[in-house]
Image (cartoon, rainbow, N blue to C red; front, side):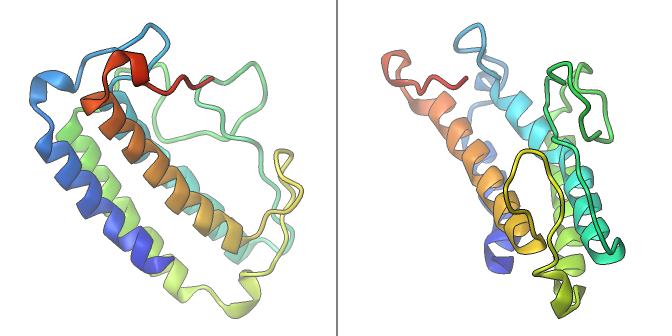
Length: 163
Protein backbone atom coordinates (compact mmCIF):
# COMPACT_ATOMS: atom_id res chain seq x y z
CA UNK A 1 0.00 0.00 0.00
CA UNK A 2 2.88 2.38 0.71
CA UNK A 3 4.13 2.03 -2.87
CA UNK A 4 0.62 2.75 -4.15
CA UNK A 5 0.32 5.84 -1.95
CA UNK A 6 3.82 6.96 -2.90
CA UNK A 7 3.11 6.70 -6.63
CA UNK A 8 -0.18 8.63 -6.47
CA UNK A 9 1.46 12.06 -6.64
CA UNK A 10 3.38 11.30 -9.85
CA UNK A 11 0.33 9.63 -11.43
CA UNK A 12 -1.83 12.66 -10.59
CA UNK A 13 0.85 15.16 -11.68
CA UNK A 14 1.39 13.40 -15.02
CA UNK A 15 -2.35 13.04 -15.62
CA UNK A 16 -2.98 16.75 -14.96
CA UNK A 17 0.06 17.67 -17.06
CA UNK A 18 -1.46 15.87 -20.05
CA UNK A 19 -4.77 17.72 -19.85
CA UNK A 20 -5.08 20.98 -21.79
CA UNK A 21 -5.51 23.82 -19.26
CA UNK A 22 -8.79 24.96 -20.82
CA UNK A 23 -10.32 21.56 -19.91
CA UNK A 24 -9.70 21.99 -16.16
CA UNK A 25 -12.70 24.26 -15.59
CA UNK A 26 -15.34 22.55 -17.74
CA UNK A 27 -18.41 21.34 -15.83
CA UNK A 28 -19.56 18.50 -18.05
CA UNK A 29 -23.01 18.25 -16.44
CA UNK A 30 -24.70 20.44 -13.80
CA UNK A 31 -23.97 18.15 -10.83
CA UNK A 32 -20.48 17.06 -11.96
CA UNK A 33 -17.30 18.45 -10.43
CA UNK A 34 -14.74 20.05 -12.72
CA UNK A 35 -11.29 18.50 -13.03
CA UNK A 36 -9.88 21.34 -10.92
CA UNK A 37 -12.46 20.61 -8.20
CA UNK A 38 -11.36 16.96 -8.10
CA UNK A 39 -7.68 17.91 -7.79
CA UNK A 40 -8.49 20.51 -5.14
CA UNK A 41 -10.54 17.97 -3.18
CA UNK A 42 -7.71 15.44 -3.28
CA UNK A 43 -5.37 18.03 -1.78
CA UNK A 44 -7.79 19.44 0.77
CA UNK A 45 -8.74 16.11 2.38
CA UNK A 46 -5.14 15.03 3.02
CA UNK A 47 -4.77 16.92 6.35
CA UNK A 48 -7.97 15.30 7.62
CA UNK A 49 -6.80 11.83 6.54
CA UNK A 50 -3.40 12.40 8.16
CA UNK A 51 -5.20 13.47 11.32
CA UNK A 52 -7.13 10.21 11.30
CA UNK A 53 -3.88 8.24 11.08
CA UNK A 54 -2.49 10.27 13.99
CA UNK A 55 -5.62 9.53 16.02
CA UNK A 56 -5.20 5.82 15.35
CA UNK A 57 -1.65 6.16 16.64
CA UNK A 58 -2.40 8.37 19.66
CA UNK A 59 -5.94 7.55 20.84
CA UNK A 60 -6.56 4.23 22.58
CA UNK A 61 -10.20 4.28 21.39
CA UNK A 62 -10.43 6.47 18.29
CA UNK A 63 -13.83 7.62 17.09
CA UNK A 64 -14.57 9.45 13.86
CA UNK A 65 -17.36 11.37 12.20
CA UNK A 66 -18.09 10.91 8.50
CA UNK A 67 -16.45 13.34 6.12
CA UNK A 68 -19.11 14.59 3.72
CA UNK A 69 -17.87 17.25 1.25
CA UNK A 70 -21.35 18.77 1.02
CA UNK A 71 -21.93 18.56 4.77
CA UNK A 72 -25.27 16.90 4.16
CA UNK A 73 -26.70 18.62 7.25
CA UNK A 74 -24.91 16.10 9.48
CA UNK A 75 -21.92 16.39 11.82
CA UNK A 76 -18.84 15.90 9.70
CA UNK A 77 -15.06 15.77 9.91
CA UNK A 78 -13.47 19.05 8.94
CA UNK A 79 -10.76 19.83 6.44
CA UNK A 80 -8.23 22.65 6.36
CA UNK A 81 -10.34 24.72 4.00
CA UNK A 82 -14.03 25.51 3.66
CA UNK A 83 -15.70 23.24 1.09
CA UNK A 84 -17.76 26.20 -0.12
CA UNK A 85 -14.58 28.14 -0.89
CA UNK A 86 -13.15 28.44 -4.37
CA UNK A 87 -11.21 25.28 -5.32
CA UNK A 88 -7.43 25.57 -5.16
CA UNK A 89 -5.50 26.35 -8.31
CA UNK A 90 -4.24 23.10 -9.82
CA UNK A 91 -0.56 23.86 -9.19
CA UNK A 92 -1.21 24.74 -5.55
CA UNK A 93 -3.37 21.64 -5.12
CA UNK A 94 -0.68 19.37 -6.56
CA UNK A 95 1.93 20.90 -4.26
CA UNK A 96 -0.33 20.52 -1.24
CA UNK A 97 -1.20 16.93 -2.16
CA UNK A 98 2.48 16.00 -2.55
CA UNK A 99 3.51 17.64 0.72
CA UNK A 100 0.77 15.92 2.73
CA UNK A 101 1.31 12.58 1.02
CA UNK A 102 4.98 12.64 2.07
CA UNK A 103 3.88 13.31 5.66
CA UNK A 104 1.38 10.45 5.49
CA UNK A 105 3.94 7.98 4.20
CA UNK A 106 6.42 8.92 6.92
CA UNK A 107 3.68 8.55 9.52
CA UNK A 108 2.49 5.21 8.12
CA UNK A 109 6.04 3.85 8.11
CA UNK A 110 6.42 4.84 11.78
CA UNK A 111 3.18 3.30 13.07
CA UNK A 112 3.68 0.59 15.67
CA UNK A 113 2.36 -2.86 14.85
CA UNK A 114 -0.53 -2.65 17.34
CA UNK A 115 -2.01 0.37 15.52
CA UNK A 116 -2.79 -1.61 12.38
CA UNK A 117 -5.46 -3.75 13.97
CA UNK A 118 -6.83 -1.22 16.47
CA UNK A 119 -10.55 -0.84 15.83
CA UNK A 120 -12.16 2.58 15.75
CA UNK A 121 -15.76 3.69 15.85
CA UNK A 122 -16.98 5.16 12.58
CA UNK A 123 -20.73 5.44 11.91
CA UNK A 124 -20.33 4.70 8.18
CA UNK A 125 -18.47 1.41 8.59
CA UNK A 126 -18.98 -1.86 10.43
CA UNK A 127 -15.20 -2.20 10.76
CA UNK A 128 -12.62 0.60 10.67
CA UNK A 129 -8.92 0.09 11.32
CA UNK A 130 -5.75 1.94 10.32
CA UNK A 131 -5.17 -0.73 7.69
CA UNK A 132 -8.61 -0.11 6.20
CA UNK A 133 -8.01 3.66 6.32
CA UNK A 134 -4.72 3.36 4.40
CA UNK A 135 -6.39 1.23 1.75
CA UNK A 136 -9.29 3.71 1.64
CA UNK A 137 -6.87 6.60 1.05
CA UNK A 138 -5.34 4.78 -1.93
CA UNK A 139 -8.70 3.87 -3.42
CA UNK A 140 -9.98 7.43 -2.90
CA UNK A 141 -6.96 8.82 -4.77
CA UNK A 142 -7.45 6.47 -7.68
CA UNK A 143 -11.22 6.93 -7.86
CA UNK A 144 -10.74 10.68 -8.27
CA UNK A 145 -7.91 10.20 -10.77
CA UNK A 146 -10.10 7.87 -12.79
CA UNK A 147 -12.88 10.46 -12.69
CA UNK A 148 -10.46 13.19 -13.81
CA UNK A 149 -9.42 11.12 -16.81
CA UNK A 150 -13.03 10.26 -17.57
CA UNK A 151 -14.01 13.96 -17.50
CA UNK A 152 -11.13 14.76 -19.81
CA UNK A 153 -11.54 12.13 -22.54
CA UNK A 154 -14.92 10.39 -22.31
CA UNK A 155 -17.75 11.42 -24.63
CA UNK A 156 -20.84 12.80 -22.87
CA UNK A 157 -23.03 9.78 -23.64
CA UNK A 158 -20.59 7.50 -21.81
CA UNK A 159 -19.84 9.55 -18.69
CA UNK A 160 -20.49 7.69 -15.45
CA UNK A 161 -23.35 9.22 -13.48
CA UNK A 162 -22.42 9.47 -9.80
CA UNK A 163 -24.81 10.29 -6.99
